[in-house]
Image (cartoon, rainbow, N blue to C red; front, side, top):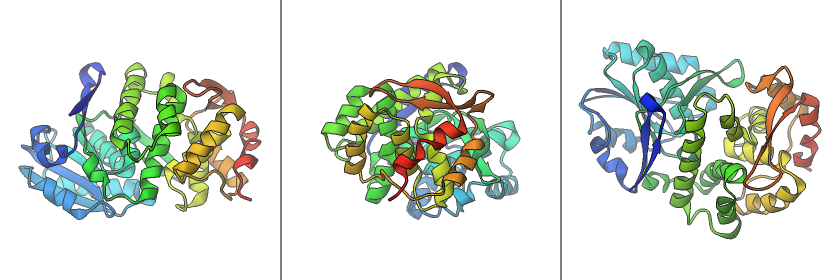
Length: 337
């Protein structure tokens, strides 16, 4: 068992990483109460069913998978279930799924009765290394990703690599893109693991090291006032492409393209072979105007432009305000041929 402590004073919690931890979740979580188990239609149904047997009063909620369903109307469905089952402030919400499930369930927990306990059990590599840690919860609205949300830290996160075994290769690569992002900005040694080793074979180690990096950043900047913005490396352009692709590309694949744009020529020479090894895209055909329009709604925009992260040397970063036009000028290098 590996434990990463996220130290946030009264909001501190543990991320427990262990093969088989899911089967003994009741030893780690307080399930002796009403528990709303939130999962999506793509997560194996037996996960929620098995977990419900560990709870005193379980209520299972399954919604249609995908970003299109990370909405206020899906939250209303969850609120309705909670009200019908008389949930109170002492009850809790558990997310079993990927980033969409965690974001949605977490925001539901943050909002119901002004906040109830939330536990996260990520079932994708992407959510293990990124969204399950840090307390960012949100839904999409008006074609803008994560525009309505709250910071709401989980009480505990359980990561069981056994739950990732059923994932297709593309989903594993999708998640490793976010771990690669963290290595490029904070940890050259981890980047060298990607360069020189087999990331899939080292999955548990990569998840553990990524969670350590994420926890360290969140501890220093819980509400994204400074350092935490570095975790958005590749995301400004990535989110724009994600919206433009209309579901054709996964989140991590879009971030991969965004990272290419925001890296120096020297870093690109090292990065592109790693992306190809992970079978992540290095080119994609997209509508540049549509991508720039999405970037214009970016939450990281300020009076000086869009706050972006640039990597000139693996393991380090530079914060830089860029105009929409500056960003648009970078897009042709990833435009499909």
